[in-house]
Image (cartoon, rainbow, N blue to C red):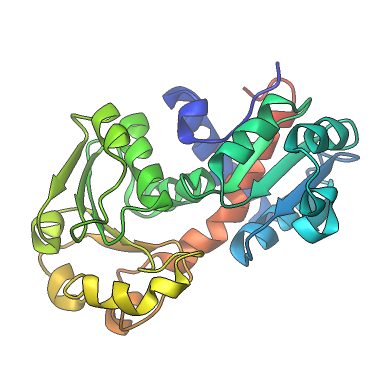
Length: 303
């Protein structure tokens, strides 16, 4: 049966844990240079309306490592850029490739594409969610500190797409999430409500971070918000994750950021480049987690 990965809710908690465990296994095999080509002859189409470093390279590398190949397309490279209906593009491409990754502004566009696709569709980032990032984040914490279930996570900053995926992750993986945002930047109310019992909105970064196991932030101006950068810097005054704030977390707490990061704004250089930062492990694990996801979606018997 065809499966899609548009949000973390598209897989069950058991399936998500299986993908994380498999990602760690594939990472270990990669370190040993073991040859494993289950996607030989398979093709990944990547439709990107937004620029990318980690998402593009990690998916292309993942397909190559598993024996497949990838085709990279921007909207200017397809008829989507000239107004072809998403439904038509989906029906055509899904007859030619085996899996599609889409990175775009509108989550509704990805849902429409998936509804008309013959092959699995993966959300590489939308204005609503960034689920692939959370696979890598949970894998990273699992490797460094163990099981995330029962832990407490602090989100400090904008209630954006990555924050939304952390909200879904709290529900799916069973941890507590405290969220501190400036007024007007809270995450979607319906998502918070759906994850009630796991998610709490608090008033200040210090309230969010005190005693937690993981501190997470993101850029204050995501792609598409660049024209608001100056205003956002004023609105987010006091929301920098610096050493003073990290010192209120659990002594063994770690810092996470999906990158790109802007030192001196959402995070201080001392924290970003310090011993508690896992940001570059997260970035590497995008590739390994996505290998496991691609295998799960495309290789019979891996579910």
